[in-house]
Each structure stands twice: as C-alpha cells, then as structure tokens.
Image (cartoon, rainbow, N blue to C red; front, top):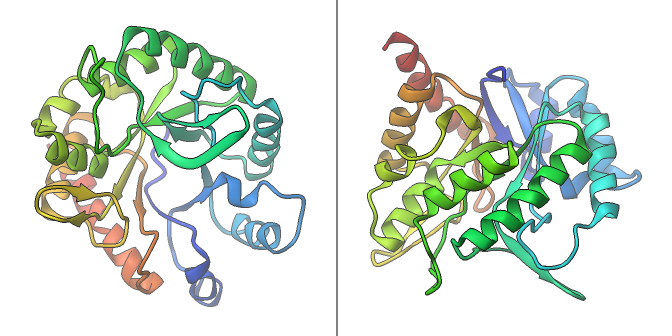
Length: 272
C-alpha cells in the first residue's frame, strides 16, 4: 500500500485556515460518520477538500465487537461515502459499543479471548468483503482489563487481523497509553505484531495524570511516543501517518508543524 505521507484530521476549527491558505499538506483524514449525510454543509466542505487533497476515512461507530448483528444500512452508507472520497482504505476501532436498542457512542475494550477472536475476525472479514476496499482495525487505548483475558492485547490484535486477512491501523500513542496504564513494555507490543499489515499510523497527545494516562488528543505528541514511532518506522519503513488533535485546538499552522515532526522520523528510516 502506498505511503501517503503526513496527514491531519480534518476538523471544523481549521476550515477557514485551510480554505484561505490552501496549505501544502499531503492528505486529510475524515471521521466517516460526520459526512455520511445526503447533503448540506458537510458535503459542501468535503467536496471542496476533495478538489485539492486526498482523503482517508476513519470511523468511530462500527463497534465491530458488539453482540448485535452488523448494521448493513450503516455499511451501505459508509460504502457510498467511500465511492465519493475514493479513500484508499477505511479504518475503525477494535472495540464494541452497541447492544440491542442502544448505542453507547464509546470505544469500549473487548476481552482478549479465543472466542472473541473468532467472532470479531469473521465480522471484520465480512466488512472488508462488503466494502470492497482494504479495511483496517485500530488498537485502543485502554483503562481496564478483563478477568477472562487469555492473552496480551498484541496477541489478540494480531490474531484477529491475520484470521480476517485485514490490515492494522496502528495507534502508537494508544500503545504508550495502555502500556503506562497496565504496566507492560510498549516494545513488547510492536515486536509481537505483524508489522507488514500496518497500513497507517496514528499519533496524538494525551493527558498524563501520573498514576494513569487519558487519551485526550489535546496535547503535542510526547517524546516517548515520538521515540516509539521512530522505532516502529525503522522496522516498517515510512508509512502513511496521521496526527490526531481533537480538543483544545491550536492553529492549523501549528498543528501541521507538529505533524511534520513525523517527516524527520520517516527520513531517518530511509537512511537506516
């Protein structure tokens, strides 16, 4: 899969700067659900962006590990949007968030068991077949574990993507957040997953409360996460990389400057 370069999440706080200055950014990632509408302002904005930039779709509502049946009305609308954006792949989260009659609008962790692997892998295979483009699942930042866990997260994640024959959307910040919250070495994570399946990388800032970390996407990327990113890239080579910034927004120019730090690590990887 081709390396798109460095991207930023498309957010309303930056629309004016983007359209006024037409920055030389490689690509934008959109939250799919924000544009799964028939018309209006969201589609007007999207069409203006598509005239100038590649767009990649990232979802937050698939809830692939939920016990209810896959929502094919949702998947049809997702596929229609993908045909419009010509996104090279679609990603969502390795999580659950639905029960019959309820959608929690949260990315809830799954138990790391063989039974859940079989269940999620089959659903992920169906989703990719239906969308007819590469589909990737993203690792979560997590704050709790389950008593019934049978394996570490990286083994669980790897088994699902390999069994489903899909891709990984690897969030390096989430690895770091979870490693601090649960006390594991973050290097054990990337050293034990099939890095050849990583199609895209997410970077973000978090809020460090000392005893625990929250994945808030409202700070610069910390040095430890940048270091992990460099280590991953040295193994994979340059990959499409996105900076997520979703609250306490700074200017677009400063956000892009932060994202461009990834370029230095990609160039270093090429020199290794």
